Image (cartoon, rainbow, N blue to C red; front, side, top):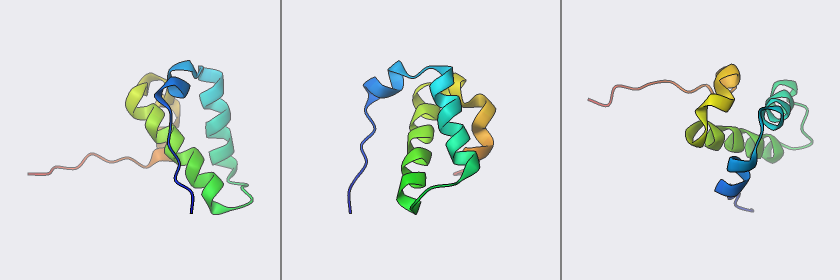
Length: 70
């Protein structure tokens, strides 16, 4: 099984249109295999941590919740 590494340079170069295209693929969920969808999900999640302003309209795709770790 291959490991996916997300380059920070790729994230830095992404435009809002690139993120919208990525989110569109995730919303359609029409992947030939589950690993392609998982790869896109991990990319969107990495973008959310590095450039959160780009993923605000798509937070529902990440299913991220705040946890109280106390």
